[in-house]
Image 1 (cartoon, helix red, strand yellow):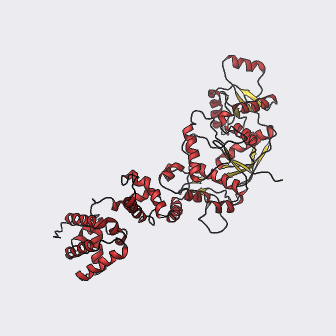
Image 2: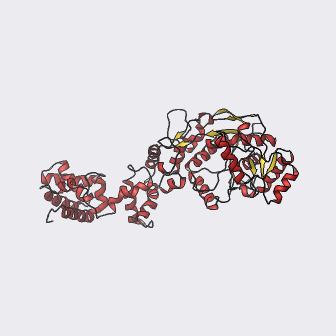
Image 3: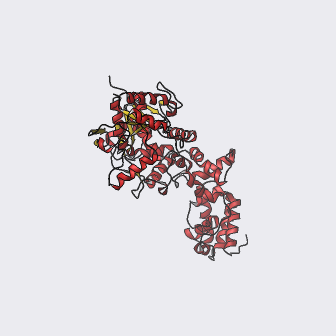
Length: 492
C-alpha cells in the first residue's frame, strides 16, 4: 500500500505573514490535495523574543482568507498534538539526551565572546567560519571546572568528518555537501530550547512528514538535518526547495518592491482567488498556455516536477492583471462588498445604507468595475459621484467652457434634462440628440462642455452613465459652479 503523503507548513510567528511564506504554504497545500494526502500546520515558536501569538493569529487568518485550510495542526488538532514547538520541549530534550548517551552530541561551554573570536580568526585566514571543536573531547574534570565558573552549556551535534552528504531534492536534483565545511552545530541552547535544525527533524519524524517543501534558503540547513535523521535512525523525508521570489529588478523581494505581507494585499482589496492564482505561477510552470486557474484546476494540474529552480519574479503588473480578471467576474453586489471598506475609509459611505441609497451606491461602484485592478482603487474611480466641489483640471478644460456656443448648449441641456429626468443611457442619449438639434452643433461641441462642467475633466466615464447617477439637481448645481469658475455668465 502506498504511503500517505503528509506535508507541513511550519512558519515562525515573528512578524507579518510574508507573501513568500504564503507561496510555500500554497505549494504544500496543492501537493497534499493532488496526492489526497494531509497538510499539517505547525508553529515554530522557539524564538521567544520575536515570536508572538498576534503573529500566529495573523498567519492563520491569512491562510484561511486564501482558502488554504489544513487537516491537522494548530486549532484543528490531530493525533500528533501539540502542534506548537514550545509545547513539545520535553520531546526535544529526550532526543538530545539520546544523542549525548550515544556520543553523537556533547556539551559545549564556549562563551559568545570565544565563539566570535574564533569566527573572526577564521575569516582573517580566508576560511569559512565554523565551530572548530574546542569542547569536542572535554574530560569530566574540564567540564566540572567550566560548570564551577557558572557556564551554562549548549549541546552540539558531533558532525562526522570527511563525509559527503547527498540531499536528493525534487527541484534541484542531488545536491552534495562536505561535512568538513559544516562544523559541530548547536542542537540545544543553554536555556534548554532546541535550535531550528534539531526541532524540525524531531517534529517532522514524530508527525510522519513524508515531503518537506520549503523555501530555497533552507537548502543550506538540510545537510545538518540529514545528519540528525541518520544519527537517530529516522527515515528521511523527500525534500523540495522552491526558488526565491525576486522583485522586477531581480533583487530579493523587499518593501521597496511594494507590499510584502499577505495582510497588506487583503487590505488593499485584492481577491484571495487572484492571489492564489498568482502565487501558483511564481516558480511553477503549468502545462500549456493557461494562466487563469481556479483552485480545483490548480490542484489537478500541479506537480513538483514542473517547479523551476530559477528564481521567480514578483511582477505586480501581472498580479493586477489577474486580479482585474477576477474582479470582472463579480456580480454588482459582490463588487460593492469589495468596495465597502475602501469607500467607508474615504468617508463616502457609512456601510449601513439600505433601500434606494444602497441601490444607488451599487450602481455607482459598478461604473468602476471594468477600470480597477484592486479594491483600494475604487474610491478614486468613483470620487466624481461623491465630490460636487472640484477644480477645472487645466486651462484647456477652462477654454472648453469659454467657447461662445457653451451658454446655448447648457441652456438647452438643462431644460431637456429637467423635462426628461433620464434614468438610463438611452434616455441620456435622447437628451443630447435634442440639444444637438436645437443648437445645430454636432457631437464633441455638445458633449465636451457638458463633461467638463460635470467633472472638471475632458476624459472619464461615459456621460450616459454619469448623468442618471448624479440626477438633474446635482447636474444643474455642478454646471452652474463650473461655469462660474470659468468666468462664463449664463442666465438660466
